[in-house]
Image (cartoon, rainbow, N blue to C red; front, side):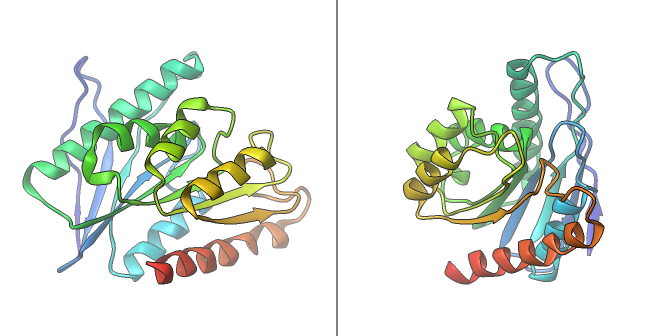
Length: 213
């Protein structure tokens, strides 16, 4: 297994940390996009990343850091720019026939420009973890490109929207995993063991998504 850090900077010279983990003969790359303040080491991204590697899928995490002073649109533009820059640097010298994109929260918003601007990703399998359903750009991309999808949300997450989840599922023919009582971190209040039990359910949903391909 090879672990590499690509040298990537935005036009303003902001460096974009990343970790590219490669295996022999992998045919799929999973691009992993964290949320604002929720890094790739958070459990709902860390374990899907390990799941991908266990299933012979290379992973590329984009470890951007947003500022708390950024407005929503500015943060969305910044994360998308980081994701595109890292993807493009990887693609300069390496080609994968298949892609997954796994985004959490703000990372799901970055998925919209990726689908729009990089045709290689328009057939990617997409995992939307606690998506920001109120964001129209994200919903527009889902309805336009209709990627094979898994939507994961908690019923106590302010970002959850039952009607928009139904719309997204209908557009993509996708699956959903809805965690009753879970918050935006997919955790249950005052229930550590219940929160931990979310992770096997998420991995089972990923297995089902992969088997459907």
